[in-house]
Image (cartoon, rainbow, N blue to C red; front, side, top):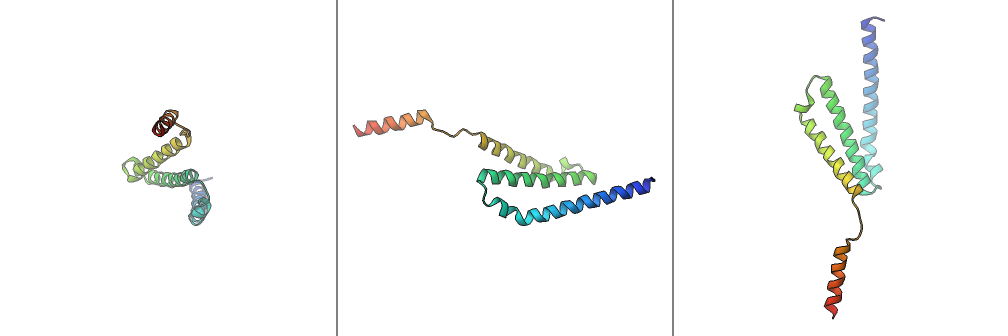
Length: 116
């Protein structure tokens, strides 16, 4: 196989991949709100953050293919911002929910003490 044939084959594969990405993005754009509207807020935030991170990563890779250093582009800041949301979501998922026993004891003591 010559270099020209190999390059043409790779270009066709790239064209197919780009077409598939475009189709998936169009589907996602129309149905994302519908799909996430019934989710709990934390799950919805997770899905939307993941979607945003995926799109930002695609732009990041596109810049690299054009030879533009992505770290000097504003997309790098956007990727970092979305990563911050991932951290916040993770903290919210692992946050302990329960009763603060010391605070409850103070409330009870205050309530019992005020009735006497």
